[in-house]
Length: 244
Image 1 (cartoon, rainbow, N blue to C red):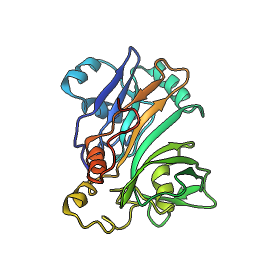
Image 2 (tube, rainbow, N blue to C red; image 1 turned 45 degrees about the horizontal axis):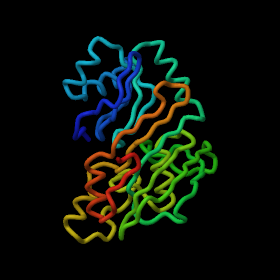
Image 3 (cartoon, one colour; image 1 turned 45 degrees about the vertical axis):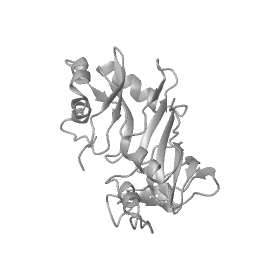
Image 4 (cartoon, helix red, strand yellow; image 1 turned 135 degrees about the vertical axis):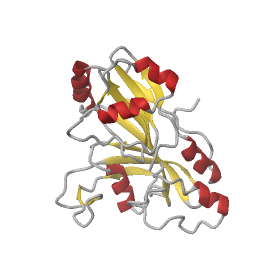
């Protein structure tokens, strides 16, 4: 998978930045070069934004899956990196995601709290495991269409692939998630709708991040074009959290 859009500069301060990561950009970090992913993210910015960070020392405070788009905080010096790592690990930090999922979660709001562990049959995957680590994801349905629903999610723990695994285990995998999603297009026969619901990545977007003790402490990234296209094709109202 390769990024289909440039990264977006949401906020730039003296010591850190908030960047909207495009889907398809990997933030994997080899031990030999622990900050290469941060440089890769900065390099994905538009030239005019990238120039604002020239000569800085970017370091990731947290990561997103390759197929997930949305907010990532990047420290611009070593001391700020340590500070952001402490702040982002605070339980008071609130992360909110948007996802288009197959089917209609019931009830319309609730919590998934199945423990998660590695899938030993497939090292790429995680799975629900009674012996795994505790995991908790809150959700609420924002809109429903014939085949899918738009859902807002709040992870209360930070396990690998947590939201994707919890949704799939509940029978509502993220649209476009080939790793956890099972059969594609689930009974969708309309050609245009099938195209919109085959985005080439999981339609999961980290749209809002609140970090107490950080100034500013609230960041929002608008939903990307592929998520908006899918929602529009389903006939759902194009009103996302954070839209004005």
